[in-house]
Image (cartoon, rainbow, N blue to C red):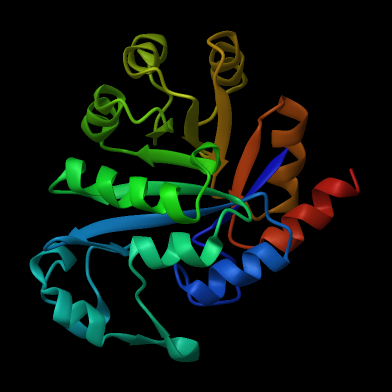
Length: 228
């Protein structure tokens, strides 16, 4: 079962920072999940819709200069997607979750540049709750693996996943059913589950045959899975 470091080793270090990513690699995570918003013509690795320093303004309404001002714990900053991919440098897989993107074509160009420099294309997995983004990527000819994020047990899983030729489906642990896993596997999809830190959940998800989990504590998840 694959262990994805959810926003890096975010249970111990500031989430979605280069520090959290580096420690996820040191903790033998199979992959790192990170979140991306577009601000002006740049793509920043950040999860929430707001930044505490500018709590009355949505992140995509800020300027690049404002985002660059932000200082996080452990002397970290909000990295760009290009910075994050360069730092990870293909050492583990990377799941880029798209939050709010104004220009998918510009995003593709940033990722293509990273692929030319440091990041093997086969190490990338692009996911989103916004399935329109996935459809655009499927039509872009990029050929990166796509992951469909869902917070439900979808009635139309087969139709939706086939329409975008996705590689994986990412379920909320709270709504996953064994039947969903069986159907996804029949469709040839990988099943990844978020966000899983409890040992009891790791146990039954492994028993159910999921392909991977997203965890805030990748070292703990790895240690528990390996002793099962």
